[in-house]
Length: 360
Image 1: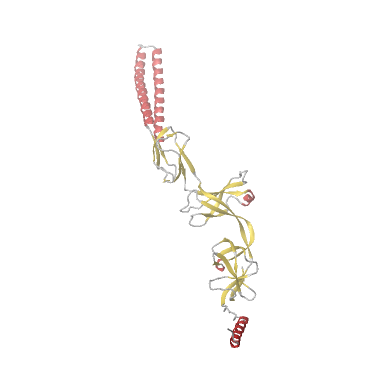
Image 2: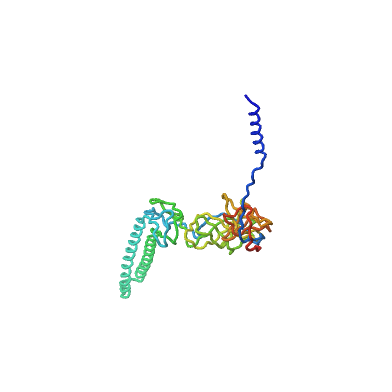
C-alpha cells in the first residue's frame, strides 16, 4: 500500500537517478610525451630496377662416365652423393676375358718369335751354303722371304699383345676429376658397354647458377654483368657474374637460358634453389632508414609527423631491403616527415623535438 510519504520518497530517488544520467562523465585525458628524435623529409632517390627470376645451382663440368670395353661390372665402389677425388677407383669390370686374350696374344708372340728365330738361323746357314755353291739362289730367296714373313707375323703378334694388355687398364675405371656422384645407372653384375653411361660425375671446382629470363628483359643483360643471388640454405647472399647467354629461346615460353658464375662458397651444392636479381635500368624510388620501421602485430609501420610535430603511426609495405635502407612500395608520400629512430616507447600524438632534419 502506497502512502503519500512513500510516493514522495520514490519521486526523489527517480529524479536523482535521472539527474545522474544527464551528467557528462569526466573526460579521460592521456598525457602525451615529448621525445627528441632525428627526423627526415622523404624524397625520391634513383635506384636500379630489379628483375628477379628463379633458378638452380648446376655444375660447370658434368661428366658421364662409361666403359671403353664390354664387360660385366664386378664391383661398384660409389653411390649417389659420394664425394670423390681425381684418380679414385670407381668400379671394376670382370677381367677374365681380358686376361685370356692377353694369354692368347702372348702365345702368339712366343710362337712367332720362335719361328722367326728358326728362319733367321736358316737364312744364315743358306747364305753360307749358297756361297759354297751347295744350294741355288732360288732356295736362298725363298728362305729369306719366309724369314721376312715371319718377322711381319711377329710384329703383328706383338701388336695384338699390346692391344690385349691395353684392355686391362680399361677394366678399372677411375674418377677423371674431383666432384660428386650425382647419378648411378648400373649395379654390380650389370653389363657395361661402350657409350652407355655408368655414372654421372659433377665437378665442384666451378658451380654455376642456371636460370631463364623473359624475352623482354634480354636486351638489358650482357655477359660480364654482376648479378645478386639469393640461394636457399646459402650462408649469405652472393654476387655472381653472367658467364653465358644462350641466344636460342624457347618458342613456347619465350625465355632464354642464362648461366651465372658463382663464387666459391662452402655449402653450395648442385641442385640448390635460388633467385637471381638482375639490374635492368634505373628509376626514382622512395627509401627510408631501416631504423625508422617498427613492427606491430607482425606488420611494419613508421611514425609520421604532422605540421605540429605530433606523430601518427602509419602502416607501410616494404619492398627491397638492404643492410641500412628499405624501399617502400606503399604507405608514404614524398615530402612527408618521419621519425628516423623509432622505438616501442613512442605513442600516438607524442610531440617530437626535432634533433636534426635533412632530406634523403
